Image (cartoon, rainbow, N blue to C red):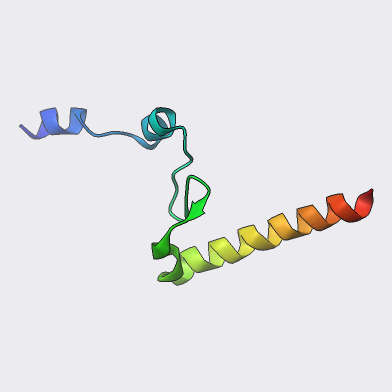
Length: 64
C-alpha cells in the first residue's frame, strides 16, 4: 500500500512543469510565501535575494 502511495507523490520538477511556476521554500510563482516571514532562515534567504536583485538593477540602470 505504501509503495503505491509513493508512486503518486509529485516531485518538485513535476510540480514546476505542471504549474509553470517556480515553487520553493520562500517564493511561490513570483510571490513571497507568508511562511517566509516566520522562519529566520527563510527571511535571511529572502533578504539576500532582494539585495542581489536591487544591486543588479542599480548596476544596469546606472551603467547606461
